Amino acid sequence: MRAANSLRKVQPWPRWIFPRTLFKMVLDACLFHGMHYQFQYRVSCNTNIWSPMENLTARIPAFRPKLPSVEKLIPYLREIDKNRWYSNRGMLVQALEQRIATLLGTGCRVVVTASGWAALKAAIFASAGPATPARPFAMMPSYTFAATAAAAETCGYKPYFLDVDEADWMISPQMLFDHPALSRTGVVIPVAAYGRSVAQKDWRQFRQATAVPVVIDAAAAFEAIVEDPFGLTGEVPVALSFQATKSLSTGEGGAVIWNDADGLMAVTRTINFGFLGTRESQSPSFNGKMSEFHAAVGHASLDAWEDTVVAWRTTCAAYSGCADTKGFADQLILYPTIASCYALFRANSEAEAASVTQALAGRGIEHRYWYGDGLHTHKHFAAAERDPLPQTVRVAQRLVGLPTAIDLSHETMKRIVAAICEGCRHQKAKEHI
Ligand SMILES: Cc1ncc(COP(=O)(O)O)c(C=O)c1O
Image (cartoon, rainbow, N blue to C red; front, side, top):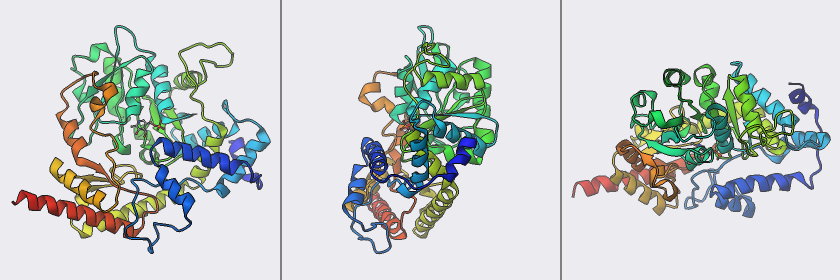
């Protein structure tokens, strides 16, 4: 806490090094996630394409992140200068963990990590350990981002893909109690699809009843957790992502939230080569530490958290209102069903989804199937064992990721909604031929 307080007293900073370093960090993160074009645009022109005066034919990106400005980072960067402590659980990292724990107010502690993937991997190692010949499987939904399976794989597990419930796009404990592969499963990884809430209670009971460890991949669920910290955190470890597309971001980063002090100690050891207090490696491990520079971005993001929440709520309400005027508000899925950083169109059929995505593309509007057709369709995971996945297939084909941004303009929303209407109209016309 003292570190967090002292961070308030810092002064201007040396301009010649950190802005570029930080800009590059964020740029690298975005390049990695295929968003480079948005930054190219930002670098190459000073006008704001999202203003009411925007060019009505300008390309609309699937997502346009907004992290704290350089000015907001300066106090924290000065602190790093002063401390000369750049990684390995520095002051900013420790203060960030404390601030998040205080914000949640449940008594659960927090360990921040280099990415959401690192948080997941460390939580699996700490709660379940590596895979064993008797329990080689990590059960998870096929309908998720590749990081879920990749994290389990690097702990030695074979992904086992489960079908999701068509209503909430997630797996539930009820479908697993009698599952034939459960006796060969070392860990179950429910995923908070698009930042939805995953309640601790059911999974805690599942763990108690089956003795199979559970790690919740809550990558995009920070907002949901802030709103219901007692319901969504506790005895089952929760892994979060703070990547640039998420509502709270450190550029790249993540966290494990857990009320098990020994478990969190094991997470800390796992992300630091198995070292804890000595230089002897004591457990399976990797380098999953968050740097002080990323923690600086996290502090500046937290400083703006309340404003961020208000801005996202305003944008989501306007987006929903815009869809309502065209009569399809029920097909536009936004906060509070999912995290604010996503906007989804739920098509009534695969054909409607195809027609809408075609109309979007025709008007220069990007869309994204964030979880693709499910991991079982990815080359690398195609041979993994799995249940029949009919609901996954239906959900994956019909949930279309629409463009969004914290400052999405009304004009942009209108363009997106108009394109969706056009797509739906075309589809209906086809059905009547
Ligand atoms: C469901 C899910 N799990 C894990 C991750 C990995 O997070 P990161 O990109 O921070 O490693 C993501 C990233 O978007 C995700 O969507």
